[in-house]
Length: 286
Image 1 (cartoon, rainbow, N blue to C red):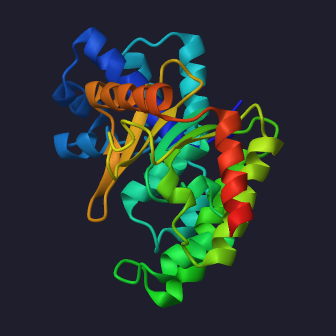
Image 2 (image 1 turned 180 degrees about the horizontal axis):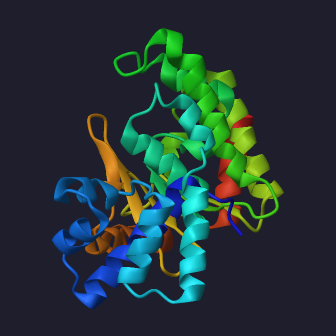
């Protein structure tokens, strides 16, 4: 079972309420009135603000949740009020990025596509340091160490009794560009090879080689599709460019990204074994 995440608990709690409200065709104005809220405050609650326990109990009664589900929703509320490790970096991270890390922490699986960089969950400290050092338009020099620390904290999900299942598809450029210099890249490639061998059941890295006929299908795209153990929770995605980033929750768009990922994996990426060989060969050549 994935670790408990306050972000995922808040999200699941509000999804249960929204679905029940839709099923019973109860308007937001009716709920706001019953709970003594303004409509604008209720809209903030629906964006995953945690309800006071008495208000939640009243709402569950209004929407006729059965006793078992009420108990589960109260449990979710207790989890939602906790603080995840990412809250320690609130001054550094945007609300959107904080939500991403909270969802990531409580996820069962992540499918990630990167064409020119090593994905954050797989980066060494030195590689991450090099990236942030060269991103001074967005990262202040005095904050670099904190950003690297955040990246290392995220990677804790790759280990433990129920590790995150990570499937990464990366372009050959990501393992060729000498980000940080030859020594840094060599260390990064050795790290990738070590992860593949150490976590055969949960970490899978596939390379799209330069000579793949459709290797530029997704050009410079960066995206992740995040999946959860609970069937009540739909997949969500994260998309990122140089100037824009954000979560994608619209079902059709997430489905489209999953389809593109499947295509890149099946039609253009090398096998796990061949990808490992290429990574090791690149490291040996440095």
